Image 1 (cartoon, one colour):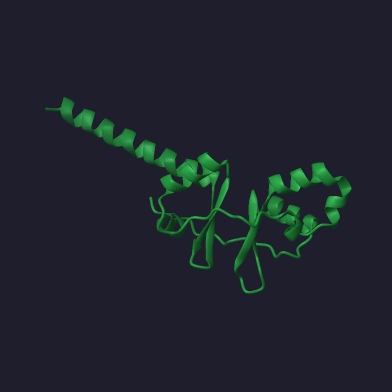
Image 2: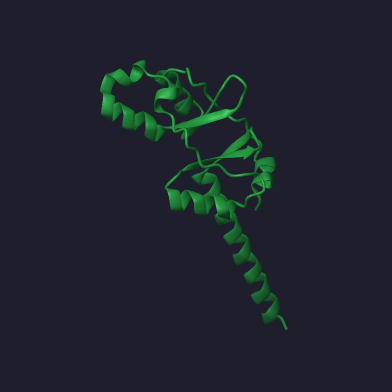
Length: 146
């Protein structure tokens, strides 16, 4: 399935943060939106990085209580692997597996369209496999009937 089609079928708003957002706000957004990562967008709406739960926890482990005085720009990854809406879900799963990511932002040029999470990728794969099983069952039933 193409990412564009998946995003159309699973319409949801893209939750982002700004580079100046404090860690507490980021943690609240991650928890409240049931998200694992937030794209960090500048004032023009261009993605400049991504901040994940892992980034928050890693920084908390390194800096302790000082973490609360930091902002998204202090935690975010600026080298972000993205996908395009014309990529397939299989390609995104491959990116996640090979690079150890749980979230891949979808960019169309400079426009952020969404974020594909590991759960999205796995659910899509499960649906594909269930469809294959049902088709095979139908073939077996049809073959037995002749």
